[in-house]
Length: 279
Length: 227
Image (cartoon, rainbow over all chains, first blue to last red; front, side, top):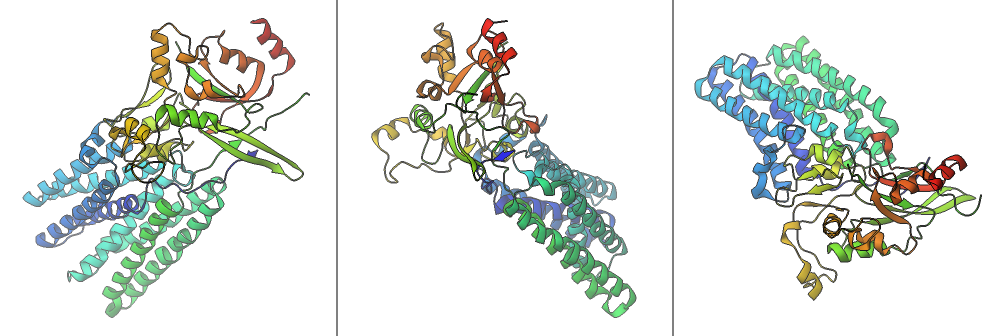
């Protein structure tokens, strides 16, 4: 196999697209906890509103990137095959359900909103997976890596939110954060093992440090802090906040690197070279 | 059924870029946009090194990932295999560009001209606002193909019905025709020569073939006798 020009980094999706995955994923994960962690009604509503605002911020960022902004409604035209269209429909349902839940304050609608938020996160993973031109994105296990990092980010942000709101350390969010950072680490490990051979050296060089941080800052640090906080009551709230920030920072950095820095195409390949002249 | 495909004979291409220039002239693409590009590749390891010129562009895949991901249905596929973009529908999200394994799609967000400043007369005449902020790519000169067919011409044989890049090729390296017609020029070339397609392992079933060697003698003779 002979290879042609070296792969180069795509420039069609930049930081604005990355922010959709960052804010959208974190917002989706956050809504999950806003729906299921017991909080005062006012605080639960604030949490849900914050989650929806994050998703909206992500979508606004991606809207800023499209070439024909006034035609944005055309994004709804292809639900049959396009995960971007599906994400848009799910986002519509998320906002409809979310605002209905805010209006009524009903737990069923909150649960429905959370389920839709999970669907939104899944769509984000599938959007990347369908991008056949970018080896770092098209690997099928990217879906679960994106999924688990969104859950970890949502749980991390929720711990910070709960601490700032004076609600202590919700056990459900702390437990899920511990589970999610481990699942994210496993997902990264599986993804890395499968994608490594397909990546351009520069893509691998960009992705490896960010992936390593998913282990270190994104998993080991939060787990250690949660364990320490569990053992020392006085440190509990502070540890939870730090664990949340660590999980959040590692996830955000990874997504930024994945979308912006590691998004090399595969260049061109010649399986045969021309045979010129007589045989 | 018809399936328009293009063939590049890598043994013949000399990398003169005439096809690139013809495409730019015909389609009035702005600077840095080349729907038909010719890569200058150096392959192998010293002392076994070869220089290969490889025409690339939209491969008009039978299973185009760009079409599947397109949220606006701007990217479509005609019955004859040509993949098209409706500039009035496209929102310029760039999803098709990252889904294309051949880097065949372009998006220009503001007008640009060859000499930076105001457009030259020909640029002003051919400028099309519809192409700003949306995805563009090689069309296999579908307008020429359609107009030629309407006049009873044969694409790939009659220049009036053949893509500009193929018409312009000084070395006879580029060919265009109907792969479903066993008597067509492209069917014969594929029969008589060893060929491959770029990144076939991705399953996109590209409509762009590269010839690299003569076929084994039996296949070549069968092709010559029209069997």
